[in-house]
Length: 163
Image (cartoon, rainbow, N blue to C red; front, top):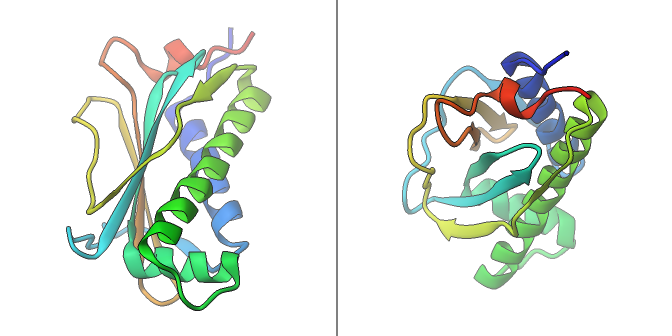
């Protein structure tokens, strides 16, 4: 029985994040953790359920998110409600692609909850199974994609078994 390794899950997350975001603006993976303060960042998160259980959180520089929203909406002025709506939809697309790639790679059926939005950078409780990807825009704005498994007993292999 084959399973997806952490590196395969990271590859899926990274590929999806870059594919979706680079349609609107340029980002690249970074080795440095971005500075995401409580007053200049936003968080969008969801929980995957079904054959794959994990939490996926995106903490992103507010200016970068505004720029993505402006490009997507083709509007210069983006208010707080527009930004929240865009952030949830953008993250919804990312999560949908992650779910599709997990199914393609390992026949894992999963669904995810409606993304939740908040200002500031908030991450779910610490777990032993945490994968973090850092990104930088071409304007030096940061983003962080955080993937967490619910508990030590439920590792990636438990939820990503190929059929």
